[in-house]
Image (spheres, rainbow, N blue to C red):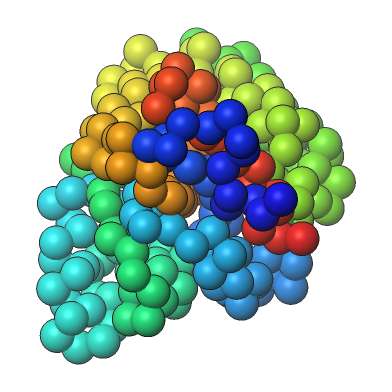
Length: 239
């Protein structure tokens, strides 16, 4: 059975959804998860809509610039090669709509950066910061060279490694980071992703969510609460 085909028990109006974890700038250097590999995965997903890690106030500017010049020049969007080199160019010959799903703002990013700088330089919080760094170090060790393997990225094992890596960060720093904390920023992302899915519910469409791979486990948990989608195995796009 095709990865994008509904199972016999799936109602005809169900949205079939892939959640695809991107590795951002590393798509340009990885051979396992190159831009070509990503491009083929998007083609195989055959999405009707792609929900992106682009804020709504940036998406319209990105679309307008691309329509006018053939390039993505909007400052936030252009840092993601999955959009500049794959999804926007593919929109010329594939029939999908690009939707916004990111709760990020420049103000959130600036405030988070300043708060983290203060935490890092606060002697009273040295133990918390050391635990955070140690968790990130364990993450690198647990990946064991698989951090750019799309088959591994789209597994529960990968998600568990990421969650462990983020636990001290989430536990100790959430309150300091406000809207930019791990809990709240993922909630903001998921609220927008769910709004986008609400807009197509019952139409039997194919949807593709593309976000940084670290967000993937949070997105999958939010999707599990929906009865109007069939969450598909994204590994099949990389067979």
